[in-house]
Image (cartoon, rainbow, N blue to C red; front, top):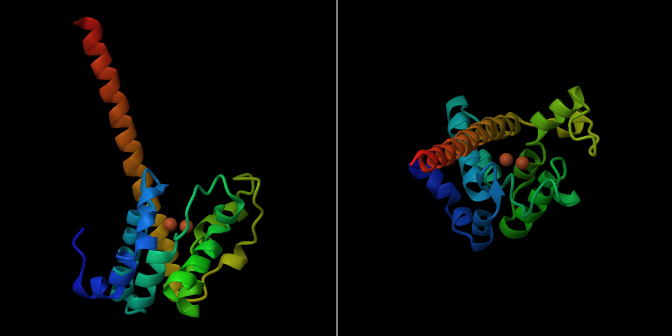
Length: 179
Ligand SMILES: [Fe+2]
Ligand SMILES: [Fe+2]
């Protein structure tokens, strides 16, 4: 991915930080969490530029929106609904983010909260009041929407790759069978 010069300048300290780089070890949508955060951040930055919103804040909060370790299904603190708070905690600890940036991170799961509010049978373990996750700024909506778009894209690519591997596996077995 070729990044814009201004974007690189805004994000270089985070992208090269050794604590942040450990996200490369966490699997996320079939890829790793470092790449996921970078995609969300850059797309949010471009959208904010287009709409003349605060591109700096969305670049930073997009990058740190999933700054946590582990699997969302296994640990309460980093569940689907709790991980934004954990990300804010880590982002404050390592990068001293502003309150506006923290608010964007805290509300980035609004898309999921809305979905769960509408269909409560999804992930019954967690109850939600979508209003609590409503973004407080246009920048918050940008990161939330970009996170959703990137997640759909990544999951789709992962499924295509997975299916391609299955077909390849099937074809190799078939060839061996008729050999
Ligand atoms: Fe997230
Ligand atoms: Fe995300």
